[in-house]
Length: 416
Ligand SMILES: Cc1cc2nc3c(=O)[nH]c(=O)nc-3n(C[C@H](O)[C@H](O)[C@H](O)COP(=O)(O)OP(=O)(O)OC[C@H]3O[C@@H](n4cnc5c(N)ncnc54)[C@H](O)[C@@H]3O)c2cc1C
Image (cartoon, rainbow, N blue to C red; front, side):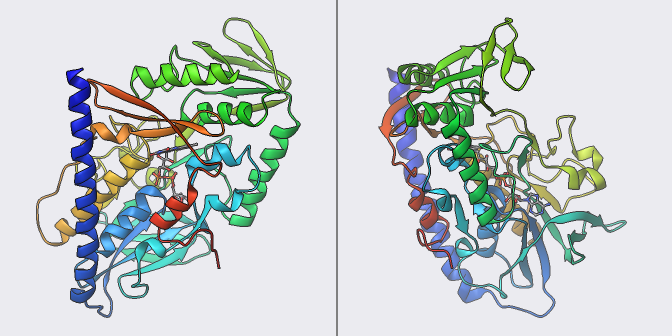
């Protein structure tokens, strides 16, 4: 009881802290506009990747950048691809467009002054001999951008595509990928979802919620759903909700065989399917760094970082990394990516000003989340290790995407 009261008080304090941080950033941004002076030949901070980590780091930097520096964002996708609507939009038709948010509104005005945007894929990082990692990034097609500081925010890739990542770069193409998936789901009778993390749980609930007549089986290798980074109660509650919907949940079993019409589990059980969706096997997108600093890439492919979020290789003090890409003791999600982005932006400015670097430590509240369990229902979760709050709530069919659009500086749902 006491631990719950403490958690509620901590959550309230956190909400106040978040609000004051928002206000502080708003004021800082306006003040910066008055004090920042564009110069010819500014030094450049390059960010590779503009999802939760890179886009937020760019926003923080453009509000704090000293005169003499500018930000260049290099992003291969045409739009911000909102991951957490992907399970829903892989099943429910009519909202595909909302998963692709137009870029650059989040950076405010200032294009050509504080920042520039390059649409393209970085294919190589070339570092200067003898410096602290300064160099160039090479963009597919031949362009190069010189950098003084580099931020890697290339996230993760999903070998099996949806529902974890769209897997294509353009919006029109991405919408088609989602619509094809919806059609595959619609035609299926026996659905098997592999992986009981956030994506698998939401996918299973959405399919069963939309099509109660289909057989939906969720297979998870651990004894508890959502075992990575979340408390026990969330897994228990989600299990109850999914079983209430009629999803068959198989825990503690792996898929060890697949003959394209059925999967075989570790127990020997064979489960027939005509639609199999794999919600496992995302891998960190670290190939770019592997070329120039193999020492900074772990066996799992994650980028090893210092607590300052500089890469672990001390020969490269000016290269930072954040988001799903990095090795961390904490959870990997958008909240953590945001928090890391703030530390990276602050540390680059501190480095320019010759100040000591800030440390990033995973925070208890980064695992706070809201997960759908069926079409109109979701559970909100926050936990601090001592107590957990799991609250049942509702959600709109499009998962309140308009709020995220506004947050990222785009008008719902206008896309020029
Ligand atoms: C189904 C699902 C639901 C989720 N729900 C939640 C949730 O409810 N709450 C939450 O907090 N988190 C959630 N997450 C986790 C969250 O989406 C990730 O943690 C987050 O996307 C990580 O952001 P990131 O910036 O590190 O990388 P990513 O989102 O992976 O983005 C990487 C970016 O880098 C770009 N890029 C990659 N390589 C290059 C290159 N060579 N050149 C140029 N650009 C490049 C990509 O195009 C992309 O834009 C969910 C994830 C999934 C899959």
